[in-house]
Image (cartoon, rainbow, N blue to C red; front, side, top):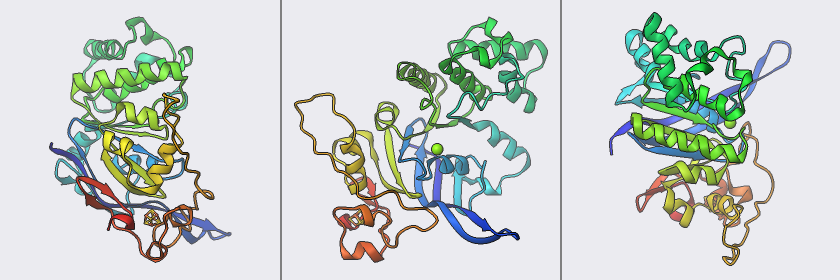
Length: 320
Ligand code: SF4
Ligand code: MG
């Protein structure tokens, strides 16, 4: 397995400003120290409750947000050092599929224009060639040539997400960060879009960072899964290891809330105490400690390292 993207101690803090002079009074620690690798050709799922920093992670990796600290290496090179031609190539290699196919498509453009837009920006293909490329992309995502003349609002949610995917594919990317790509869709449509993403991955040798709060969707598509809590990854493992034998108490609680298809399998639901604390004022030590049923003294004062345990990664004092 070859690394495509290596994330090292990545942090993204947003200032909290107050008063007439917009004085900075604190920071929201949306992403607070991530270390992980995305391997070529894999789908790495990222799960967690809303507000845990999943989207910020995706955007910071793609450099849509600049990191407060840390590094993102793409094929061994630091993205922050890239300029000019190198940066333009990079912009093609790294693409995003957004959660809301309604909001992310300009209503004034036809579908053909929407898909041609990235080609235009990067000055790829001209005239008839560009039309042919747009046509090809429509076919690839399961739409038709005649759809090019229509507007996004004439399409269903699932079709709009196909348009969003065609746009992301236009520049032959290597990595696609898909941020809750099916969360806004009906359950019946979700699997169609997931299947499409899987087909495209095989066809174009894509690597995915797949962000979602729905554990079953993530399980279906991912090779490995990372669980986020308050801006950190608390556990990262092969999908089956993680779902069959979770190590971190937070992962255990999340999974205990997923309904099992077989009613004969009795599963004890672990109910988490309290709400997710604010990322502006995270708890000391292990940020999960106020809600953890296995909390020990050390958990209140010392932040557990994110470390390898039997080929998996976990940040919890129970394993150190
Ligand atoms: Fe619970 Fe302590 Fe592990 Fe945090 S470090 S998850 S508080 S046992
Ligand atoms: Mg989000």
